[in-house]
Length: 224
Image (cartoon, rainbow, N blue to C red; front, side, top):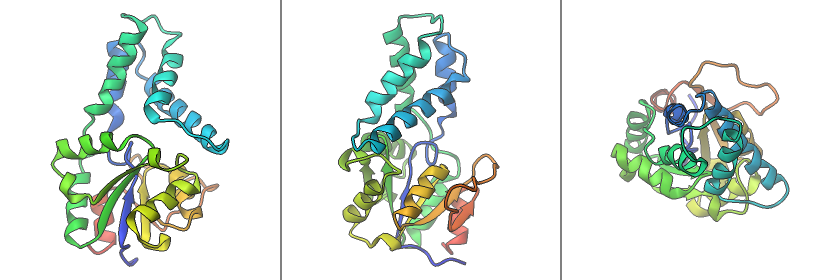
């Protein structure tokens, strides 16, 4: 059994939040629901490209531009601006995955500090956790908007180290995205991969120290 970290650092989008409902918003405006993951991947692509070039932009800005591009080839049932607003407003209503609240409470009870580190705004994480009634269980809500680059740039993870005041090797990044796990590992953090869909971990990324199917299982593995 691995030793518990001093601080767990959660990714937010898809790791804590269940984004599957966004597909229904695409359907609402007359767009095929399979465009939802394409849109999200486009947002990440642009954020990563900016980070690689040494610059950054807010998630909300990239999300709006990427959504306009994805919807441009669709015969929408309303004006483009209204369609974009309808889809993006879903981000403020997303639920947690069912395992999150129980896992977070157990890890908190075990004395492990927990923070979030999102490529999105901290306010989105605050709303998400507040609606679920577990905001008090999370010590800090961090966003790369206060760093100088998106994850998986090393500076994003260093920002978490500075903000928490904890040495980098005593933080554990928890994420569903292998690229996030890889970035954190390269920056010196411990890592845990949450495999929510039962896929193989890509061999070209640094393997996570811990692989689990849920945050409840993570609490079990860490002895919480």
